[in-house]
Image (cartoon, rainbow, N blue to C red; front, side, top):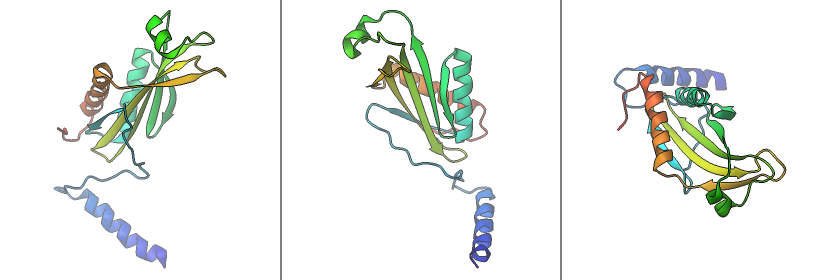
Length: 164
């Protein structure tokens, strides 16, 4: 009985989503709800979540940034910081038992032509050791520029109309 009721409803929704001139954007299945925590930055992108994910991963690979987690709605990247950094040592303590990395996490959710991307950053002392410590970094103009670059890259291959 449930299948009989569900099939016409699903067909009706599918046809409604395909009609031209519809102001409603079709959502992809199983999209999580995102919040923008304090210190994080966000941008809305005129592309689907898979297109945003692909833009993130390809950009990271081109720049030599290590992708440590690649999921449908989240990509986590790390960039190792080489050499001494007295300013970070002063702020976060030394990273004397392992590498210090900047960890960039980008979460994203949305529909076919509108994806919210949320980026947060952390300094990790002694990365990938038992003594690992994580410190949240607030966003700044440079990291926002990086997020805007993601928006441009994802939208450059998208057929969606640009969002303001």
